[in-house]
Image (cartoon, rainbow, N blue to C red):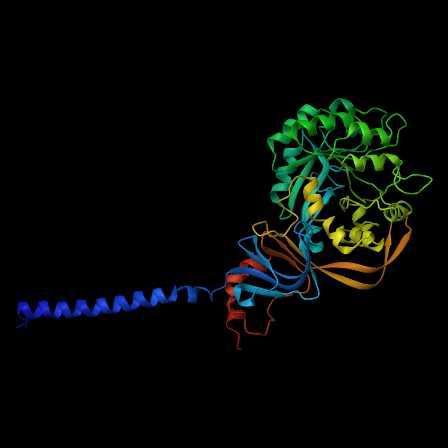
Length: 462
């Protein structure tokens, strides 16, 4: 026979159990509230990454001193004299190194993969990711490989698939930079059609390019300016073959607008240099007065010491440092963005200015001032650079050498708040050491590898 408690006893029992449960729930809630209290929350990491003790060079914000840089959710969160290591999932000691915004190379050729021979919309171009992060570059601008006719193929083939941020200057030639058959065709230089394509993709197309023209006419420059004006973007000029009928002085004083860009400034192929003073020619002097920007664009054949040394000595330094990267220049005198920067350093331009010419200056030239700086809230693109001391040699387009005593090396590159290149593994745990306390959470910001930390790694004996 089952035994049952009287109803009143059962009610009292239930009440006692309810009271006990309420006490437990209350205690648990109180515990949760304490766990979420300000004093407890303050001990949790606030930032994803923290670069500590590096010499920050940020031209836009006038910073040239040792500072800490904190990053959160792909953005710069804070730049200050001291930020505690405990405030970040991963703190990286960068003492003795320079910390700058991610570098911006505004003259490259990266429309690769079409298979077209002898074409910058093909085999003459290189895939961007192989040449960017390892030298601190996070943003590049393809300089006219595609025109309005083939830009969308370039966008689908390269821009949309690259981890590097790729912008484009549209070639004024509708078919792009595909060799003389196309580039000398004035009938395919259409400012209206080019502007329409630029306006269709305003977040990607940042300018218009004219290049390699051999004829006596002003057609490519005039049509490029029409396109640039309609789309409100700059024109970059590679002035092609030198012609008396279209002198560089007229280009600078009559054809280009303030804010347009003259690349290959130290080539000597188009009267950039005054033959008497060896400084800049009158055309370049007047162009700079009018607000035209001057870009290095070394390439395979557009930089000579006999111009660069006396012109820089005369004070005519670059507004921006770029490579003109392609299959020839990458293994010749140019090599990469930092090697071009080393040359400007070797001629006496201070490091602070050289970094500005690879960050805030090019960002401003292409009207993307959200890049090239370390302002809180800006995109967290960062280059950590080592300045090596020693004896180094730098060559030019005619295979002559200038010796220097400094050379830049990229130790770490961060794009959109994530480490994408780490030369010597700074900030990573030793393989046989206990993992960092926040290793699991920090992993998504600290490695380019596609896999998660291994179970074996986390269970290693300490």
